[in-house]
Image 1 (cartoon, rainbow, N blue to C red):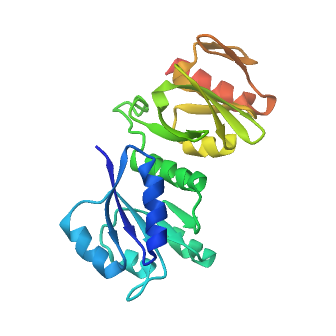
Image 2: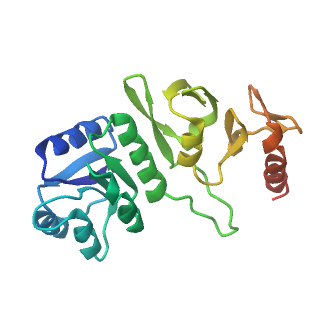
Length: 239
């Protein structure tokens, strides 16, 4: 099922840009577009919306006042040309705050934050995280966008302005930071083991005090990460 999006903005070019960005993601669709908040109120009465892209400076009522008026709002990503609204927006628990003009790279980060927020890890009756097979992250390798399942991820290696994303079937080269991926891959399935490596805990086949072992690879454990890594791995092996 696709994520249904509503774009609320009084600038046609801004709406067009968001629609262009969304068209690159197969699992998202534009369910509607509104030029002001009053029209959006009527639209929300007619059907379910998963994610709302909301401008702030609009006629009749501002985007923030509109958001405050909703008893049960969908997930929201704010889009605006004015940086000063960011703090108030985050106080309303929005997913992200995008400053116009919105680059696709920055847009994709917001989408991944939405995916993390809308599909949290669920715990089973024993309090342990269930499989990550239904979680995913969108990554951009060159001009192509890929939807990568958490369950397929083996490890990530950061170097400079790029991250090598290694999966069970393919390797991607992404212009991003390892820290940003660490934030995207929130939950209990991934662990930073080194300044240059993040590993999928479910893919670990063994470990020593200095290495993590995967099926066909070995990754180093960084000295400053060792104590935390050992604590987590020992806890997992005893659980």
